[in-house]
Amino acid sequence: METINSISNMTELSANWRREGLSIALVPTMGYFHEGHLALMRMARTEADRVVVSLFVNPSQFGPGEDLERYPRDLERDARLARDQGVDCLFCPSAEEMYLPGFQTWISVERLSQGLCGASRPGHFRGVATVVAKLFNITCPDIAVFGQKDFQQLRIIQRMVKDLNMPIDIMAHPIVREPDGLAMSSRNSYLSKEERRSAVSLYQALMRAKEMVADGIRSGQDIIQAVREHILSYANTEIDYIFLGDPEELKEYREVHGKTLLALAVWVGETRLIDNMLLVQ
Ligand code: AMP
Image (tube, rainbow, N blue to C red; front, side, top):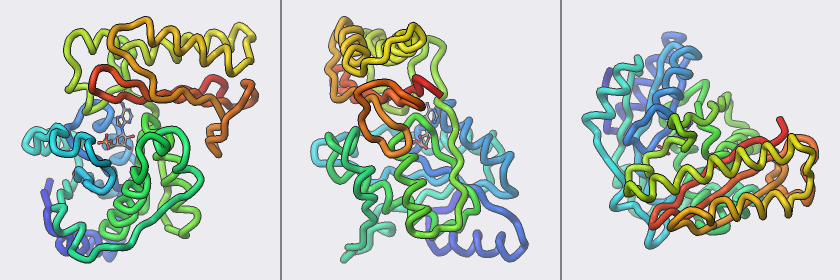
């Protein structure tokens, strides 16, 4: 596995692969790999001749006061894990080269970016869409793999690719969870022992909502209330949002009908965790 830092070297490698007729899959990440990331890499490995994993803690998707500086990093371990998954290239550009002085071009997927995480993290998805578009231009992939854990992000990237005619297949990987159900996340490393115990409340609340729907309950308000109560019964939890709605357009529903997404963002101590589940597939 090659590790590449320079954008021009990455562009050249991708261009060479394409000239040879090889297909390329990209897995964009911010590093500090866990089983969720590795599962995306394995999916990419089965789908293309060459796999590029980008590792870039993108400053433009962090708001003021967010965790950009303390975001966990371990490049050596990440490189070892990526290599073990059969990744061909780990692309780790610098923020300086990604955002040259005078940078002023942004991609905004407007309506899909407004609610859910977009409401509490203004500018976040503009940063995500822009960096993903840049990574697409640099690595020229045929396929890119994203996790359903960041459901809104996945929808935004799918929309961007469609709206801007990017010739890239977006593949979605299901959420990878710890044995007790907590969705894996690099940010889980921030949790204290006690917070880790509270963090499982997100998954439990989603499962409870799913059971309510299976029992015939349709009222969005009732389901959201039960989810809220369950999460708040744990120490150090604070709800950012609970969304119940349409998984395609991310519009809120009053009642469960057809495919219905339940998505959550919860503060556990100082750590903001997200999770989601389709209540009706
Ligand atoms: P991140 O490094 O957190 O930006 O995540 C990089 C990619 O991995 C994104 O497409 C995420 O949705 C995906 N991902 C992160 N955690 C998980 C998980 N637990 N299960 C599935 N995909 C995940």
